Length: 116
Image (cartoon, rainbow, N blue to C red; front, side):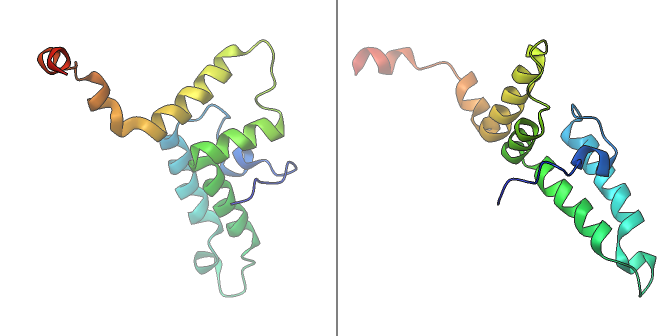
């Protein structure tokens, strides 16, 4: 999926802060869908606002796309905010490798490592 255009404020469309959690983003998306969905607004409603909300959620719900969006829009370029970089990296890392946590927490079997 291509990276979003820089002139679109996806956080603003959903009404969340740039450091919003995935649960906050999901909740805001659902709220915006109720306000913008053409089926809920009438037969002649313009679908464009709903499509913009959908695209915002697609980008912000995907950790890699969100990180790309933050870098492109300048949200990741605050030199004094090293917490942002750590937070973004951790968010991406844990979303990609969360299933490996049990494996990483398990100590190696010392008997097998001595025999091998």
